[in-house]
Length: 258
Image 1 (cartoon, rainbow, N blue to C red):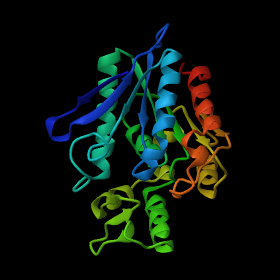
Image 2 (cartoon, rainbow, N blue to C red):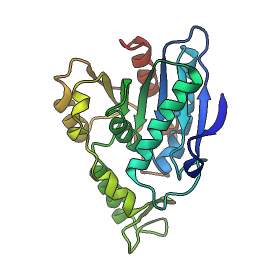
Image 3 (cartoon, rainbow, N blue to C red):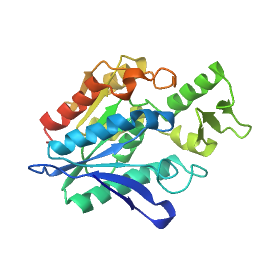
């Protein structure tokens, strides 16, 4: 694994590149993290997934959005479009460093929604959405509901609308941009090859499946695994949801784009 920074000086992004082992494929994969506490809890799964995919011959890049993790800056003034642009930068970086001809995206929760938006007007081989948020509005409402359920020093809404949740700030400016994103309003998904892989049944997942099932290049898979993302006390198996990680790996290895 190689770690480095890429992108512009104003928004330097931290990346972790996993070089393909054995016979290299022509396809690279960018992994798009979720946000906040979910990022921390998904880190082990993302790292293991990257290692497994690299062992299967894929060039894999994990990275932090601007203002997150080890990337430059903080979330003050960051917009949803900034994070979509960061995914575009990661796509180009992987093409440059690995000399791959095509790149696929995999995103979890909010990272799935951002990856789907980033796939528009980009030459993306495949897209995998793991427990993706249906929309930015649904995601923000979920966080807001959690705050209302247990308002505390680490969970509250500031006077300016910023939401503080488990030690992370979701600024009002970022919420506004996210609210414009909705999987059901992304017509490019009806044309591209992608998979919706979920750890549990949910009405929002069903709505997405029903909207895109007519696309012959779309697949849906339920791989039961822990998914209580918003409960910090109940970590347990969510740190290593093996069934869903295996399902994602299997899709990339056996899918048409491999």
